[in-house]
Amino acid sequence: MGATTTLAGRELAATPGETVSTTVRVHNSGPLVDQFTVDVVGDAREWATVSPQVVNLMPGQAAEVEVAFAPPRSSDVPAGPVPFGVRVASREDVAGSRVEEGAVVVAPFTDLQVELVPKTSKCRRRARHELVIDNAGNQPVAVELHTSDPDDELKIHLDHSSLIVQPGTSAFLKLRVRPHDRFLRGQDRRLPFQVTAISPETPPVHANGTVVQQQLLPKWLLPALLALLVLAIALVALWFTVLKPTLQSAAREAAVEAAKEEQAAVSSKADEAAAKAAAAEQKADAAQKAVAENGGGAAPTKPPVVGPGGVDISSGSTVDFRITADAPLQADPATFATFTADPDLPADKTLVITDILLQNPRGDAGLLQLRRGDKVLLEVGLANFRDLDYHLVEPWTFAPGQDLVLAVSCQDPAGETCKPAASFSGRLAG
Image (cartoon, rainbow, N blue to C red; front, side, top):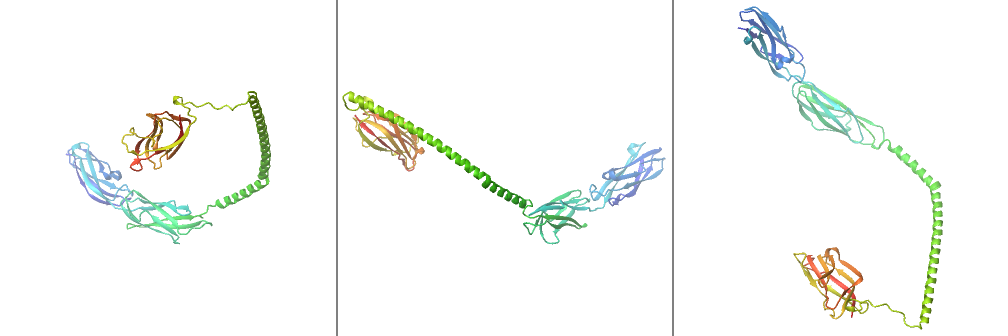
């Protein structure tokens, strides 16, 4: 049969930090002597005690067991009802065990703490603090924050002016403090201020802080400037008394030495020039003597320069002409428009080119070639020049019947067509 149980109070009001108790009546309804174990299950088990925990009862006998609850004053136990169960276990009849259920209504309490970190700060323009709000109570707390300083010398700014802090948690707020006035030099100023947290559940809580305002100019600046001034005076004195005379003396010595070396070099060059002049004079005398011995005659002439077809290209009439292109835009960079001299040069003469001037005044883009017939002699990009001058060490020769061709591949004209030009200077021989 097991046990029959009766719980005296099923809803208990408890104040955190205090104890409340009730009783459970245990009746042996079985035919045997039995032992009953009493304990508490549920959320209230950690802070519940049972006395006595074990009772021995004869058949039909009953006993009362006290069950006490002492919820701690901590945020770990929230305010409100906390369910529990009183379990009575029979040793002889395990299936006949009983559980009586109830609830402990934990009363709310508030424990609000406010702290400034750091309490004292140093600054020249502005200071930074952190405001820590701890809710060590067992219920959420709505907090309003107010700042003040007794002398109205500070501007204080908080991230939030009101907030709700959950039980067992902390809120961290940034607090910035800036003095209204600044000063360049002088003693440090201690400026106190206060932050007040107001909650409907508790009296106002205060946190006091202090800003130590320092001068704008660092204290080390004036001694450093004085040290620099003394150093500058010492350097100036050292310059005029030691370094400058030494440098001037060294410069004079170097100048004298350089003058001696230059004079020696000039003398050496003069001697060398005199020797060369004497040698030239000797050669001239020898040449005159040889001419006299040969019976006089004309001085030897340079041999002719023979070009294609045995033509002397070192002589002939001078010639200069210009070829101007008017090349249309080409989709294929390998396609060229060709141009020759207008009017045509004499067909029976050998053309000798010694100087070339390429011009691209409009800044066309493309490719320009100078050809002897189909052979490319020069190729340049139009975008690489506006004026380009060539003086040929070895002149270009064009035998009779060979054309000088200006070929242009127009890729990006400044107008509708590309209009580069080439000017040539040289001789017509033969």
